[in-house]
Image (cartoon, rainbow, N blue to C red; front, side, top):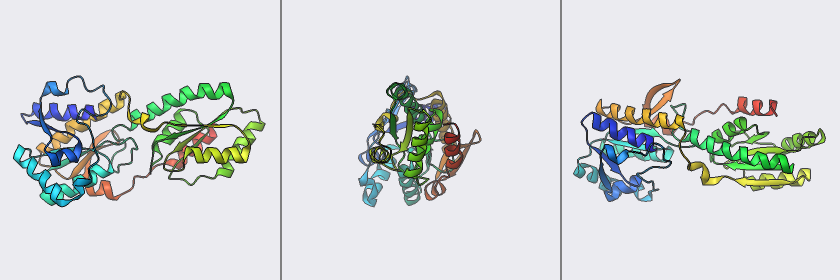
Length: 305
C-alpha cells in the first residue's frame, strides 16, 4: 500500500493539489486524525510492507451519526476528494459514504486475496503469494529429507487465489480451495498410490476458508496411517517487502486515482485489465463475485504431480 500512498501524494502535489493523510482508516475519518503530507513525508517508503497510514477496523463507521462526523471533519479540514485503499469492506464503506454525502471517492483495490471484481490483480496479492512460496520452498527441504506429508495452510477466506498460485509455483501435489469442494477420499487415494510407487513426500496447500489445515491433516492421517505435519502461515503473508510487481501496480493505481479525481470522476475503483488501467463503479465491485479459473489450475497441479 505504501507505493500507492506515495503515488497519490506525489501525483497530487505535481498537480498543485494539497495531499492529506488519514490515519487508521475510517476510524481516523471519524476522529479527524489527519496530517498534511509533502514529498518528504512519503520518501523511502516504497520498499516497506504495510502502510505508513496504519489501518484499523471501524465498527463506529457503520453508524450514520459517525459517518456524518467523518464528513464534517473532511469539510472542515478542506478535503474535497478521498482515495480509499482496501478490499470488500473498505469499498462497501466508501460506496455508502460517497452516496450519502455526494463526496468524491476513488478506490484502490488492496487485498492479498485478489478477489475484487473489475481488476486482474489487486495490490498486495503478488507479495503474499511470493511470501507463501518462499515458505513452501523452505518447508520442501524438510519434506524431502523427512519423507512426510505436509499440509500448509495459507490465507484465503472466500478465495483460493493464494493457494492456487502458490500450489502451482511451488510444485505442490494438492490445492484445497473454497471454490471447489474437496474429496478427502480421492486425495488420500492419490497419496496411497503415490506412496506405493515410491513417492515419499507430499505437500498439500489449503486455503483457510476451505478447511482447517489441522482438520484435513487429521483426516489424512486417519485414512492413510501416514505421518502428517501442519504449518499455518497466517499473518506472515501480510508482511514482507513488496514485490516489484506490487510496487509498480501501487504506483500506477495511486497516480491514476488522483487523475480521475481531478477529472471529476467519483464512486469508482481503479483496476487493471489486460495490462490497461480501468475504472469501474463501486457497486459493481462489491455486488459481484470475482470468477477464479480454479479448474485449469487444479488440473495442471495434478498433471504435474
